[in-house]
Length: 87
Image (spheres, rainbow, N blue to C red):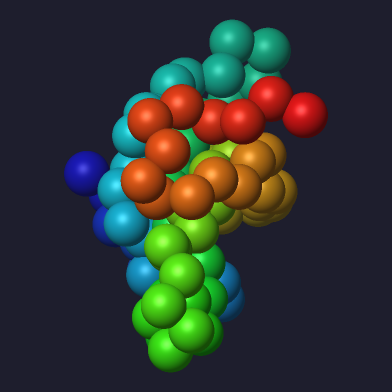
């Protein structure tokens, strides 16, 4: 739970509130965890112009102390899409 709480707090402060944490996996090579997080991107902008919301999928690396050390966006899709678009 501490990992999910720290990731949620980090995203609220630095990116956007997480929509959903979809996985937490322990890293084998190093001490830490890989977390996948979905975030609604630019919610107000998309609503204002009557567009479907965009969902960003982020990979987050958390160290052994359960602190976020890095993150990156892996993909972006419309919320109504069932699967991610392959580019």
